Length: 364
Ligand code: GN1
Ligand code: MG
Image 1 (cartoon, protein in one colour):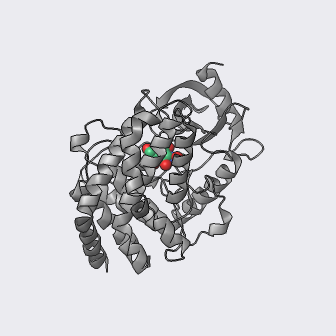
Image 2: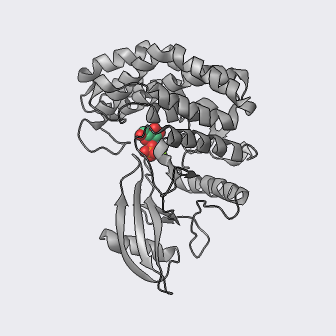
Image 3: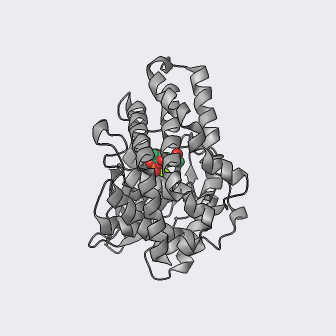
């Protein structure tokens, strides 16, 4: 069926009335497919909605996933009455999804906004840090036991290394021979990268409700000024560590190059961006963090960078079943970029630690 017809049909199942005008593909996110669908409502006003086709290879239990995010979005929405918030539409039988066998669809309100893929404006970065910090605060009283683990061991760095080793052992498309250098580097930083996982297993870091996918383009900003409005992409909201959110955000936002840059000479941490994000995030969270959490924040950036490199590389070796790609070597390019970033982070670790300590002192 052609996509226009399909999106209209899905919208009708979510009880949208009026005239269907068309859709635009939103090119954001490496896992799900996202569309803005446009309607003229029966009273004559134009209105957009967001439809996503959930990637059920990544999310094996999409119904439970929807239960998680419906609860989380409603918890947050109740805390900010009258303010912009994300919410899911329901079908006539009160479901937040439509499953047609091959595809798994969901629909939310469309929030007119701006997103940033790469940006160095300190005010925007600072506000993104505050938004992710506030997100954690909003969920501090959310019962962790209500959440399914949508992707088991998502940020279990040891498990990610094991998955990479499995991929290497299988080598189904014969790509291992060309990635020896990448594998050698990743294996050389394995123990250092696994410290968050190991400390959590020893009970030295508390589990919190975390976002787990804190790319700056998951924050919707005001279209007219630099305010952050809403944190989106809640698919991976699960029990996690504060370092998962901090580290992943830095890995993405503080890199001087995009995540899949081929310009490796320029890949590295922009410490001004690091500082602006850390300030915003810690303004909101410093008072609630334990000393171990604070001590491992800078290291968590290396952890999340190396971890994602293992994921991109395993996907490349397996023939790219997981991440959306736009060239045959896309996952290899992403791997190399994350490795270059990790190497730079290793060099800058003392400065990153010092900045975290300064931000914590300022927040007190
Ligand atoms: C995926 O869906 P998106 O693009 O926000 C991935 C993240 C990775 C990211 C890398 C569920 O996020 O873990 O860090 O790509 N999400 C999932 O760009 O695997
Ligand atoms: Mg995501």
